[in-house]
Image 1 (tube, one colour):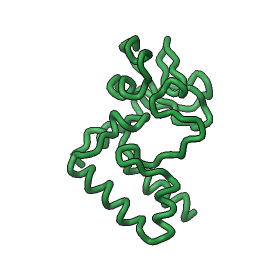
Image 2: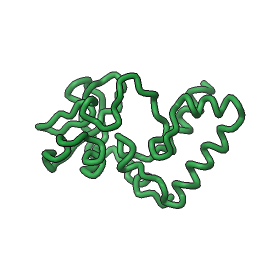
Image 3: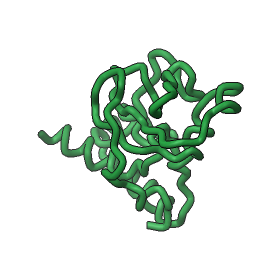
Image 4: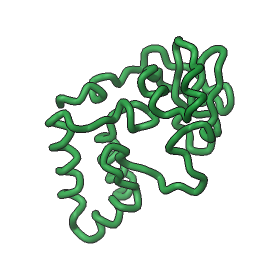
Length: 145
């Protein structure tokens, strides 16, 4: 893939969320700067941050000295649909509906093609800073299992 976010998946530097205890992946400063609401993004310290992907945790990002809650994120909306692909605004329910009506493969192929062309923006649009492509296969496996 041409997308820089697709090659950054690493287990190196994982940290435990201080709120829920889940293992969390490191996150780039670029992602945090794009996700945190103004004016909070103006005062972020440089340093090693991690993203908590636990949907039940109110802690979004953290470092050894800073905690950023989900309510401080630009994309956070109480009751918001669970997103599958942030770059192209595809929710989990959108993809499930497409799988049900037989258009899921086309939806996934669109995202794969855009990613191959380097037209995704996972590092800035996805709160996790990670590529969304794996989410499609993960959901397919969950629905089959």
